[in-house]
Length: 261
Image 1 (cartoon, rainbow, N blue to C red):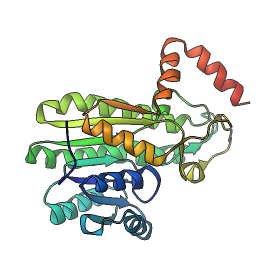
Image 2: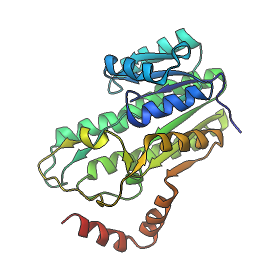
Image 3: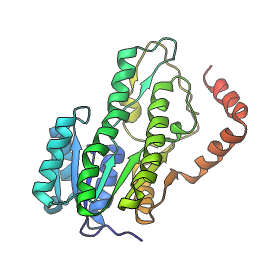
């Protein structure tokens, strides 16, 4: 069983939603937390909300640029001398069809959701190797198991993140670097308001689904870390459509096709 007291955690995309909730629960469990976001004013406001100023630092960092990741790591090591946990949470969505989506918008999505996370992994792994271990947590999505129509590029970034995280878990296990993949279902955050809207917009989310809180995702992430799990799907009910999709994809596809009309 892992513990967080005295550990140093870095969280990307920490200015709101899941990233802020993870920062708070980690800080509440005794970790020092470095909160990263592109917007310094928003990340400072989030840091003030979690209320652990003696054990938290806010840094402006755009994970699309490796030099900014390296700068954030350097500042973290200056403040706390080590990095025990790195949480890749930064990301956004794109609502469009495969046929009509703008390729520049698709590449931008991958730059943040996937390539930014991979660059961060490559930057922090040497630090963890040198100190004898650590944990990387990738915040993915159930959309990384079930492709969502009209959110296909977002799903693609999450499928890719799932694959690279799970492969890295095997590669790094002998070096005591643990990799956890967290796959939330629908979550009540500002995520949907920040989705890039493309040429063809349809919503496949059932109107009856309210979504879980960011705090619930944070609790599941904490438990996954403490128990050194391979993957966490939250809420647990999302295991059901995931398994149905594996066994009988036509059934799930038919349901999504009805919603996408």
